Image (cartoon, rainbow, N blue to C red; front, side, top):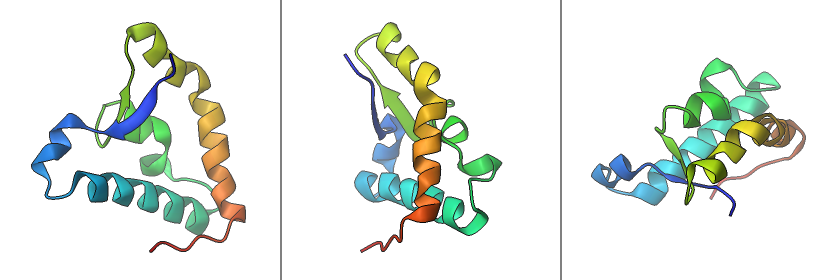
Length: 89
């Protein structure tokens, strides 16, 4: 089974968990576009490895390990945001 990104369970304390998660993604994409790549505080590793604000959900440790194995590929994909005009609603 594949791992998926979800909002951190602690984010239930926020008024809008979806807004909290969407805000994290927006900040990361804006940072990538502004700096022609992410700064150290806007990489997937920085945002996900401590499980906050992005939590990697998986049914077991082996599936969760996929993020560590493919994280750099995901990051390179996200870095492509530099080349994509993005408008947030």
